[in-house]
Image (cartoon, rainbow, N blue to C red; front, top):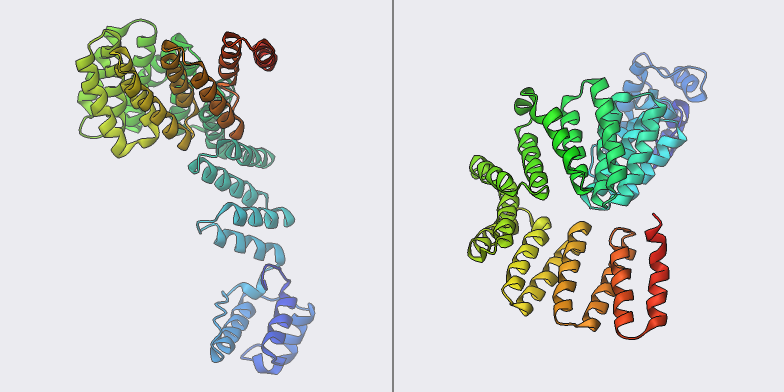
Amino acid sequence: MIGLDFYSPSEKIRLMRKRFRINQAEIEGVNMTRAFISMMESGKRNVSKASSKALAEKFNEIGKRISVNLDLDDEYFSRQPDEDAKFYCEEELHKDNNHKKLEELASIAKEFKLDDLLARIYKIDGDKYIEEKEYTKAFMSLSNALGKYKELKDDKSQVVIYNSIGSCKAKINEYEEAIFYYKQAISYALQEKDDITFLKAMNNLSLSYYHTKQYDKCIKTIDDNILSNSKYTELNRGIIIQARVTKAVSLYDLGKKEEAVKEYFDISEEIKDEDEVLLAVLYNNISRYYLEINDFQQGLKYVTEAQRLKSKVSKQTLPNTINTKGQVFFKQGFYDESIMLFELAIDIAEEYKQFDMLLDNYKDLVKVYESRNELDKIKSAMENFLNTLEQHDIEMGKSYALYKLAEVSAKQGDSSKSIEFLNKLEPFLEK
């Protein structure tokens, strides 16, 4: 390999000699005559691993004389171009590569038909996009990885890929598609006896059921597949706790609020010294309960503690907590303070691409504006919301924004503008 070209063993010897302007006699050695070197260079003899080691040592030594560190490994001269390409890609994948570099490695893997490596490169690229919260791009890369693993008939690797693709869909609020991928992950996990991914995918599936308001399915999934098997507690206690929280939230939304809040407090006691992220979520949920029963003092106490914890350990989920605090202030008549809090939550949700939280906070901001009949402010907020959704290619929330814009236009007497927004809204109503 010279640069990013990959050469045959004979070409490597010839190119290396030309590079250092030496003849064959200068690289002769024990058991490696000039005639033998000539035959290897012309391709008439294969370069064995022993010969490759001798050549690598010779050229490394020649390089050192002129302060050039070649660092040729023992098998360099015996490798064919496809083997060199594989060696190069595998070495590069040990590094923290950017997407451009991964694209370059993928091109090499395609050229030399290194399908196993290509699948791995696609997966790494997808995982990197997930870290960067670029979920649509992550979905594309992981789908490519899945396709390659299917070609390779590698069912074991597909387990994790299906779960990750499901999470990409869930992150952009496409929960119905997420459910499909999680079910595939569960099926493959059972087949491959991958208990860890089975547990993760089942937990993710229950969350998607929750987000699609299928609360009974959510609870049944958790009870039948997660909490019923004691071995999972030993396998991953964290997921068991998360599943209990999801079940409690579902119970709350089904109207079984006292049962849910009791579970919030029970779990809080269990984890208060070990999981501040989840503790913040529980405090936030408890504060919502107190807000609903108009116990503002207790509500403010728990939401403030949730905000303190999230600011320290989970800033990306802060919008939910700030939203709750905004609702506390709004219910008490502190309009300006609630607006400030909802706008702060919107900024953070946008920064961390938390689009479900973004929608919730815009909805509550609009409620405040509606209470004061501030139509222009509603219009401005909804235009900003639509721009954000367009920028990130997100569908969820567009119908709400268009409806509110149509409503504002109608109230302001602009019937043509209202009809324009209703026409834009129509395709969403047909879905």
